[in-house]
Image (tube, rainbow, N blue to C red; front, side, top):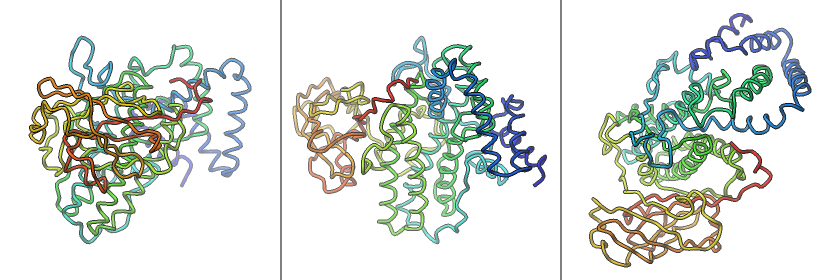
Length: 473
C-alpha cells in the first residue's frame, strides 16, 4: 500500500470514531511515523519512538514526573469512566436538585447494533480484531437462546457505558477532568508526542485516539446477535441507560464490579451451552470471557488491587446478572418486553455493610442487608416472621454457602436483617454474590435460582497492593 493511502486510511479510522478530533494536533506525528515505518523498517519505528520519548522525558522529568505518575493512570482509567447521562451522587441518586438523570442512548453513527459491512470493517479495525469467520453451528437448542440474549443485552449496556465515557471526557464533565488546565496542557504537550508516535490503543479518545474497549464490546454484542438472528430467535436491541457515578474513581470501581459479575456469568453461559449439547459456540464465549478478564485486571490495577482476584473466579448465574442490569436501564425504555428474554428478574438484595458492599473488611462478621418484597408473591408466607430464610453466597468455585438470617426486622413488606459472613473458612477475597433464599442446601449454583426471593447482593473484599496507594484517580 502506498504511504499516502495508508495515511488516509489511518486518518479516516480516527475520524469515523471521534469526529470531534478531525484535525487533532498529533496527526502530524502519526503521519511522520507511518512514513518512517514504510520507508525504513519496524525496528526503526521503535528506535524513533524511543528517541522521542527519551528526549521528552529528559527535558521534562524534573518538572513533570509527579504529574505523569498520577495522571497517566487517571487517563488510562478513563477507559472505564462513567458515561454522560450519569446521575451525580451516590448510587440511585438523581441529578442535582432531585431531577431525574438524563438517559443515555448509544450513538448509531457507526451503524451499531446493526452495522453495514463497511461499518463493521471500521469497528473491527479499531477493535484490533475481527468476528470469527467460522460457519455458524448447524443448530442451537432453544433453551440456549437466553444465553445469547443475555450476552447481547449485557454487551449493549457495556457499549453504552464506555461510549458515554468518550462524551464525558470530551465535554469536560465535572469529575472527569484533570486537576487544572495547566496540568492538562502540560501533560498533553508530553503525551501528544510520546503517544502520537508510540500509539497504544488503551489510551482514551481524550487524546484524539480511538477508544478500543467500546469497539470490542460492540463485537461481543454483534457476535451474540448474529447467532440469534441465524436461528430466527428474538434479538434484543439497545435500551436507554443511566449510571450512578459522579467521578472517575467511582466509575472505574463500577466497571470493575460489573465486569467481575460478567466473568462469573460467562462461566454459567459456557456450562449451559455444554449441557444443552451446543458445544460449537463455547469457544467464542470463552474467548470473550478471557477478553473481559484482561479488562478486569487493568481496572483492578488502577484501583490499587492485585490484578488477579482469585485462583478461580466467583461464579454467577444468568438470572442474577439479568436482574443486576436492571438498575442501569431507564424503566420502560427498552423497545421490547423484557419478558422476551426468558430469565427471571429478582428484586434487589441490598447490602448495607461495608459502604453498600463495595468495601467489606476481610474478616468473619455479620453483614447487614435489606429487601423490599413488595410484589414478590413467593415471599408472602415469610413476611413478618423472624426466621426461615437464608443468605446464600457464591464465592469462587465453592458450592453455594447458606447462612440463616438473624435479627430480622419487618416494616410492612420491607425487611432488614443480618447473616454471618464466613470469610476465614472459605477465603472469601474478591467478589461474593449473595441472594436471599428459602432453602439452605444446594448441590450446585444453578439450583439456587428456584429458591431465590431477592438477588443479587454484591460483596467486595479486596486484597490491596500498598505500593500503588499513591496512584489516586
